[in-house]
Image (cartoon, one colour):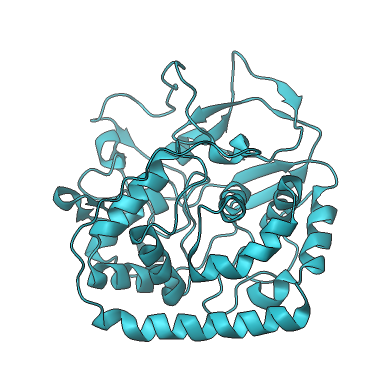
Length: 351
């Protein structure tokens, strides 16, 4: 993509975002639609490390949290005490640091369980930072956020992996979301700065992992060890307990193949990604930030666009870029973007 073309596309995207933001309050409420995606084959080249599909017949994972819902939990740095049952978020999302954000909208804090619209903050967390298995929505422009809700509802945004259950759930939730709820969530998450929480390390050998709640956890104790990284990114929380407790202060390590950061930077320069996404990929108006965000999530979105399951106006701008890249290229870009400071200050957590 030439720099001139990129600039034109960026301008078009900004105009589109402004139009969406202006029109959203007048949109009529839509009746619930059938959101279940038809069965689809798994596309060739799917990077399973990014999608973390369930393993058929695998035993239930061992949780770092107690099984007893009455047990009171504490995490470092928080004055809040929550029971295991409260961490499940069935009535209200767990919020370990309530003084770090403004009042949460009802749909973010409580949801509407009787109408199949779960609290946004349970999966995406109270600050919108999310976890590797879902989307980081903090700091997104409201116009971009609202367009994604429309794309989910209109069948334009699906996962390339039909086994990705939380994407299928998101389609259902977005379908049942009222326009006022979508806007309140969009405006709330837009005000939350994305946390700097990922350290990217180039390695040839990485910890062995297990699946837990759609993300990878480093194996501790029996079965622990290392294995070759191959052509994948291994993104793990640094503390399994805090990750499962949905702590917004949790840190992550993303192990990436040797040489992937330099390769990713070269690709970002080759395809002029900064023209649309900002000088340090920190975002540009309604064009989303990708710096310092989960490389697993970024990889899924790039591959979904390449596979044609993520469409819509924003994705159409990206289509010629991702089609020109190999799956390995997409991985390298995801690794490099994750290594940048989410505040737009360039290189951040790498070693």
